[in-house]
Image (cartoon, rainbow, N blue to C red; front, side, top):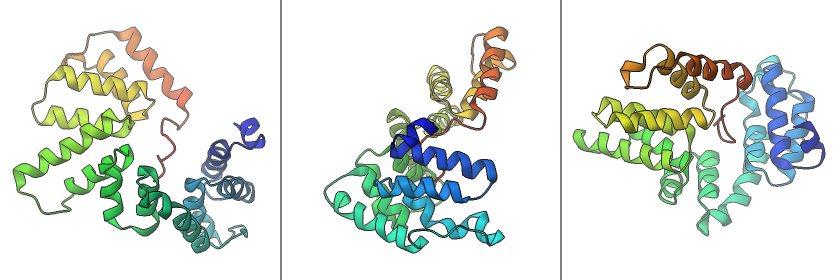
Length: 235
């Protein structure tokens, strides 16, 4: 990761900064430097992290490193770069616009343009009571957004959709499929659930009883070492 970051890859620089921040529980000077290197190459997630540094533990400890821009400056920079792309139909740019402005219209537009993370958050928001829907339609709409997000590859949505199907009388074969897919995608909850259902509670979803495979899969959690997310997992 460090080699890729030092070679100039902005995504690697973001992830390295995240590793340093999480290891120290706040944005250190080195983490700040990598976020800035990444942000200067156009990485929106680094800009957002820098823009939210006032909410970081370093702000509480009063030891946030000086940056090349103020937090609000980074958020404005992200918005200035994302808005033209969003207006041209870029789904990820629409999601970035939602993140920096909190305007739900951008979230909905991003979801409608098949951005998996936006689709997931549409489902969560509606499930929590946002919008005006008839009670029996709300669940259907939540399920539809979760399905789209899962099919578009978002691991959290895969697990949430599996739970949704189970709670709403869905086919158990589909429930098993999405639990397994979430585990294959590296989602920590998916890995732990899949391993547990194989080894300890196979009858719940009619998984085949396989202790060796169940414990083997569970052992992979130690390799994940807190990972299992994706580029937007911190949002």
